[in-house]
Image (tube, rainbow, N blue to C red):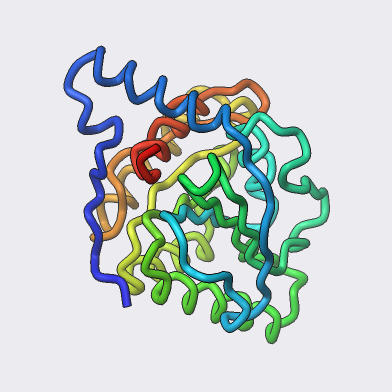
Length: 229
C-alpha cells in the first residue's frame, strides 16, 4: 500500500528563480515532444500491466475533458478518444510517454448519472484498488470543470484519494469557457479543497485544451515526476 508521498517532487512550486521555472517548462516541452503511444487497457485489477516506470493517473467526472487534455498535452489529436457520450471510458488505459520515462493512465470517469449502481461500484472498486496498490503511481491529476460548481462526486473522489494516501493535484479544465470572475472563484475553491486533504498538492493548475492555457505548466509538473532520460 502507498504511504503519503512527497507532494513537491521538484515541480513549479520549488522553482525559486525565473531560470529554474524556464528550465522546468523546457523539460516539459521536450518530454511531451517525444512519442506517446497507447500500450495497454485493463477492466479488472488482475489485468493490470507489469509495474515499470513512474505513472501519472488522470481522473475526473464523466465529460470533464480528460481525453481532450491528454490530447493537448501530447500534441496528438486522437491519442485519447474524445466522446460526447459521458461514461464511455470504462477501463484503465495506459499510454507510454518518452519510451518509458512516464506512463499516463486514463481512468474511468465517475459521477455519470445514467450508469447503473453495479457499474458505478465496479468503477469505484477498480479505482481504489489501483490507486492504493500501484507502487509506481507518483500522482493523480484530478480534473474539475472550471465552468461548474464542485460536485459531491468530486469531493468523494478527493476523499478516496486521500484515504488511499495517493498525492493528487487538482487541474481545472475548460477554462476558456468560464467567465473571469467565476474562474477566480473556482480557483480559490479548488485551492481550499486541496489544503483540506493531506494528499492534496497545493498548486492548482488552470487549463484549456482549446487555447493551450496552462498546458506548458502541466507538462513541466509531469516532467519533474518522470524517470531520468
